[in-house]
Length: 255
Image (cartoon, rainbow, N blue to C red; front, top):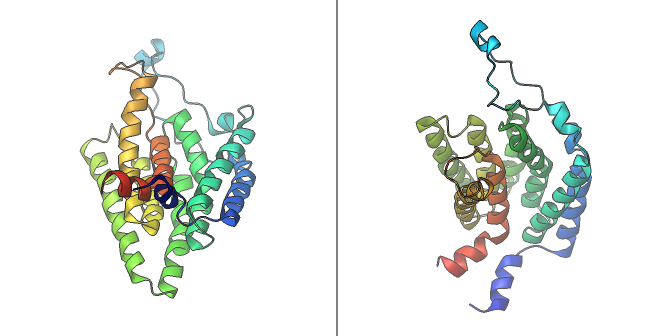
């Protein structure tokens, strides 16, 4: 495969209009990410510690910041806006104007907020993820049903069952290693990736499970024992890689 044809696969369907729309939408909605984070209610407090624990508190466990504290981080709005703008432009680079682009852009500010929250607290709040299903499922499926595109309906549903099922199985086997918030997020990403194609879903899966351990080793100083890192940001980054380069990677390297 020539370099020109490979580049054509990477650019595939995006147009200048979709890139501009995605970038502008990302910049504007990224500014609202701190306010979105601040609206998330704090998780229920843990049971009261015993008298012995009160006398000898465990200082090894870091105190999780509140969502309001996270939302007040300096320059968070500017950083979120810049990152969302870049991600939005990449999404528009890959997807032309249409319902696929609409679904991805609607998820974009939520994805940025979830990545920030998980990075700071190692939690993916259902307060944000559950309403996303209510919004995205109709946005994804209604145009397909109206167009009678049953092939894409089958692929999207099967992607959700397979990808979400894998994460559910991992959580069921070892719940201490994976939170149920990751399972919920996997379902959302599966719907979005399945809507576009199998190549995007497959490459996203591999990117997620390659990036996670590698970055964990790097951040832990190449030590197997070290701080536990949140998995949500790797899932989101893997989804972006799968969407942007999935078809090119699968066609160039795996076929």
